[in-house]
Length: 192
Image 1 (cartoon, helix red, strand yellow):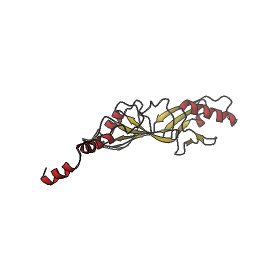
Image 2: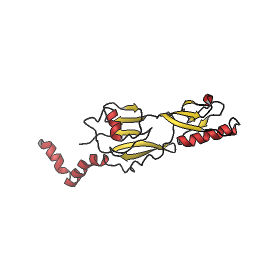
Image 3: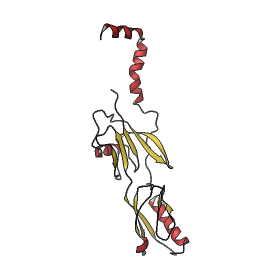
């Protein structure tokens, strides 16, 4: 440190220096975000691929991709909103529509998820982007799919954005936090 730098530093009170040194650390804390809640029962959303089986009715049984507007187009029925429903609830909705339309008296319908919508990871990983979701994923497994953490990654606290009721909410997460399809994970850069 040269004499000019020493004279500048001597003008700043020590307490101010300590606070200035701690500011970068404060920004990498939890950001006052709530912890990531458990994902609970799986809710369907745009991008999910499902298979609808109407027992005894091959022409009504098919694979569907939930459109961006949240609907699926089942033959002979108006578009059905699937967003936010569990697979069982969607099966009940389809059965009710088939009965109301007078097509089947007592339809037996099953819905299974064939492919989940992707999760997204960005920030300090080697290959940020969208990846297929698999049940049981955690933040750590998502990061490993994306090529692992970079040398600059803060690999202990993460930001996860998850939609609730169609609205995105921000949460803090740990490496072992379970993920849900559609989650956006931000791996932050460490500040020291």
